[in-house]
Image (cartoon, rainbow, N blue to C red; front, top):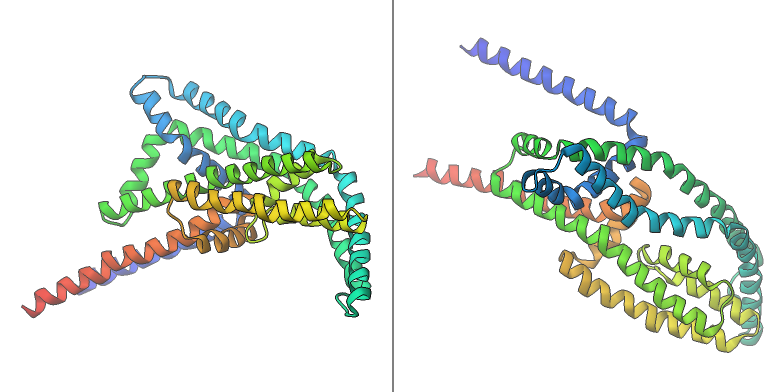
Length: 347
């Protein structure tokens, strides 16, 4: 009997090793497709309830319903992003030119402060390095946007099959999930709320900052206000510094051009109005969509951007939240269960 058990245990270990090796091999070979897979998962989470409703309640055909929902996602999500990227791409020359203007303005501003207060703020070589980094990074950013076309194609390709097989896929995941039903429900709720919060909340907050910023840029008469609107929208999605990456450089250029009033307005309006909009919406809109701690969002976005690129804005905070949730689930699944077993044994 013990020999049979040992043989079964060896076969189990053998199969686990094979599965892990194949899983690691597949993961390594499919690393470049991870952003497409995560993007498909994000849109699926936002649309799967509609998909199930239209198929099961309205009796629509699966293929046609999937295509219609994908078209809806393309129009609502990708068209505005595409227009924004196109607008910024057409201004690359302007951006590179202004990167040199920013360096010149920063040198002048530093020189004035150092002369007035007799202190040393930064060497000229360090400022030149900063300008070189900015001018070199801009074309790379635009080049990366063109590379996303392949990612978008595979994202929708994967999304189609996820939508067509939505109910079957969900049942399979539920069946193979080695957790209690209540913990599976907790996991599903956490993933859904976090994706809703980051996929909808963060872009809305960034767009709101861009619109508020554009109003101020038009009032003060900033050059190329719609370009800076796009920069504000993109910067608004980044953690910690956020939209300050747009209005602080503008203020530096204004001070260096002896437009002191414009520079003061940009700083006051930026930190006072745009920054306030950011804080208010993060503590109201995001809290309604998902009660996420601000530190989870900040560190999650930093980690996610390093791991997954732009889609990491959504999945970075989700990784941290899932890690904390899995710790709680582990405690309820195993530690609490082991304590109950020990009490029974003692009795």
